[in-house]
Image 1 (cartoon, rainbow, N blue to C red):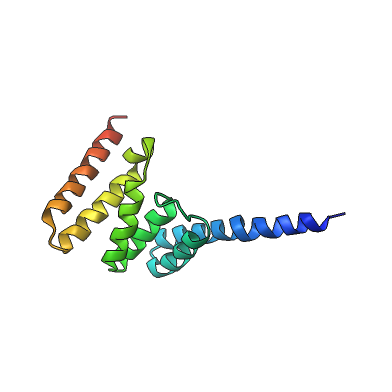
Image 2: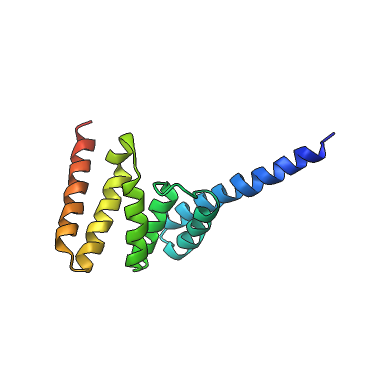
Length: 134
């Protein structure tokens, strides 16, 4: 027999964890399959529910890439910078960090900010060299 508090805990688990994770994976899958608008919607909803206070999350990373693909450069920049600025440990030298830096280099270049673009391109190259030597 299920107790009422068990049902409540289950509902909380579904609402707070399972639904946001489902939206996260839908968003990532949509991005990888070439549907950045769907990815943007799913990942933005994920950030509201699951990733509050976690600016370095992968949801923010994929949301930034989706915004970039959609030409929403200021939003892409916000999410990708947030992702990179809050990475810790080995994640700082990850493929995701290199890709985020490359996307930011492109964004800064489009904005005519050559120095920032070059800095992010150097960062991406440095990360990729470090990955190759592992």
